[in-house]
Structures are given as C-alpha cells and as structure tokens.
Amino acid sequence: MPPSPETLPDALSGALDQLSARPAELAAAAIALLVVLVPLTWRTTRTVVTIAHEGGHALVAVLVGRGLTGIRLHADTSGVTHSTGAGRGPGVVMMFLAGYVAPPLLGLGGAALVATDNTRALLWVALALLVATLIQIRNAFGAFAVIVTGGVLGLVAVWAPPEVRAGFAAALCWFLLFGGVRAVRELQRSRRRTHRNGRRGSSDADQLAGLTGVPGGIWAALFWLIGAAATITAAWVLLF
Image (cartoon, rainbow, N blue to C red; front, side, top):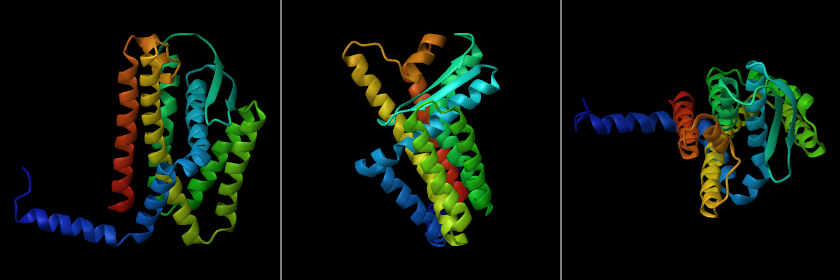
C-alpha cells in the first residue's frame, strides 16, 4: 500500500535527515560522480574500470576451468583477456558476462566493507587483486597502469589517517559503481554506431549474442540493469 499523504512528507523528511547526517559519504559520492562525468578526468581514470573489467573476465575464466594466458591493457582504455579452452558452452558465456558487471559488483562489495568500517581490509583486498592481475599482464602499459593504481592504494592503506582512508575507500567504491554504469552506456552507443555503419561488432555483448543467440542489445541492457541495481543497493548501504 502506498504511503498516505500524511506520512509521505514525514518519510521524505526522515530520508533527508538521514542524508544530512552523512556529509562525508555524500562528498565521496559527489567527487566520484564528478570524476566520471567530466571528460578529462574520466579519460584519465577510466583504465581503473578497465582493470576491474578484465579482472572479472580473468577470474571467471579461471573459475570455470579455462587456461588464462594473459591480460593486455591499452592506452585508449580498452583491454583484452586471453584464455584457452572450448569456444562455446556455459563457461565461455559466464566469462564474457563477467566483464561489464565486475566493476559495479566490486563497488557494491566494497560499499559493504566501508559501511562496516572495514576500509583498511577493502584496500588490502583490492591490492591483492591488483597483484594477481599484474602477474597476468602481458604488455608494458598494462603493467604501468596496474602498478600506479596499486601504488596509490598502498599509500592510502599504509599512510593515510583513518578519516582520509575511509573517504578514499568510499570514493573508490562510488567510482567503480558510476564508472561501471558509464562504461555500459559507452558500449551501447558504440554498438549503435557500429551497426549503423553495417559492421559486425566484437564487444562482449556481441560475443554473447553469437554464443547464445540472444541479441547483443539484450545483453547490454542486462549489463546496465546489473550496474544500476548495484549502485542503488550501494547507495542504500552507504547512505541509509
């Protein structure tokens, strides 16, 4: 039953009071959103989302029993994960599905740690994942990007005061959430341009379409829905 007219203002007032009591969390969200929306800062930091994206492919490839042969990250913020094994089947579908959903799901998992004051644990887990990724990197730019990202996380984890560490961890989670959603929107626009020009796409959504027969647009929409749901859930966890 929808709230009555008498209770709706009270509910809104309570929500605003709850938000006003969390200025640090709101500031972290605002900073992350600004970084993702401004073209210059987005181009500079988008590789972090690509690292999470390719890491998702790599992790699932290992979990489904494929042979992981390497990850390459490029200066244009694209990336590719190479694996060996069967060319079709549920494992391959799961591997291609994992890329675009990895950044927002990592952001949601990080938000749960931030909400329980485990920010140091979050940063050390992120560092461990970056070390595992670095082992699989097969090009110089990729190694540079992972080392720089890990260096920043390490400095914050070891040297930053608790309040700075908490704010940075929250902003990182928001960045993965917002950045993951923006990456999917870029995918959708890129697919429209590619198909308008009569070319066949090679994105994760197109690969999934070829493997399953489900149109690539449906897969792209699923990526977006998962990212949006993760962002809404994280907002509830961190702000309410």
